[in-house]
Image 1 (cartoon, rainbow, N blue to C red):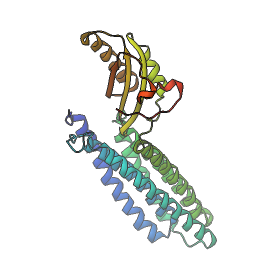
Image 2 (image 1 turned 180 degrees about the horizontal axis):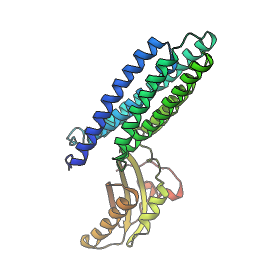
Image 3 (image 1 turned 180 degrees about the vertical axis):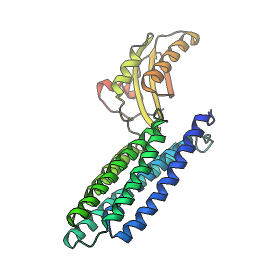
Image 4 (image 1 turned 135 degrees about the vertical axis):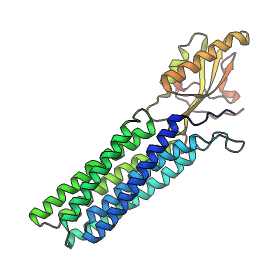
Length: 310
């Protein structure tokens, strides 16, 4: 069991995310207070939208924190799945938030209330500055997949907040109160869209599906092209966490000394690492192709499914 300690890069990433979390939480509270005082459903909806960003940042920070915790005898893969599970639960909660926003929006469309456009504008303007500043900070860590995910949320939130400013100006100029709940419908759509992405990705990881963007057939072909490999079967690829992938397979090779087969194993691992970013592998060498009757899953290119047991 190996553990790689947290690096200076992890510490820097964690610091950036913590600052972003504090600023985002403060803005959510501002939106709630301003939305209630201005009777603006758009501002309250923005609070829900920023909550989705807060969740994304929290998940990113949690992934960085948990990745630094070593595996143990009870959690041999570590704690990466904890963040995935929380992401799934939060994704479901965001779906409920979006439906509640739509309910309130349609209710207000039937009976629009007075909206303080000035409050809408200055609070939304503060949001554009805040989200823009966080996006700039996150851009410095664009190579980190967690930061890239959080960055996309922040960019989307900056755009939606800019729309609220436009809505506030439109209300101030025209006096049309229906604009506020109409904006809320659009924000609810954005929240639902973000939550569906979170639910889909986290559920795929929890069900140990093939990681997004990976094709099992391509991985199989890559292994087959390595000199010394005669056959590949019982191939499984899954994710332990959002950015930690694993692979297990059976590789048939010719009868040779262990010292010679080691070079084949090293070549397989290097290809999986370099081409597919799969670092955790369990590769079993065999001197002959398994028979299905013996309980081994045959190669995936034949598109048959069989049980596997050892």
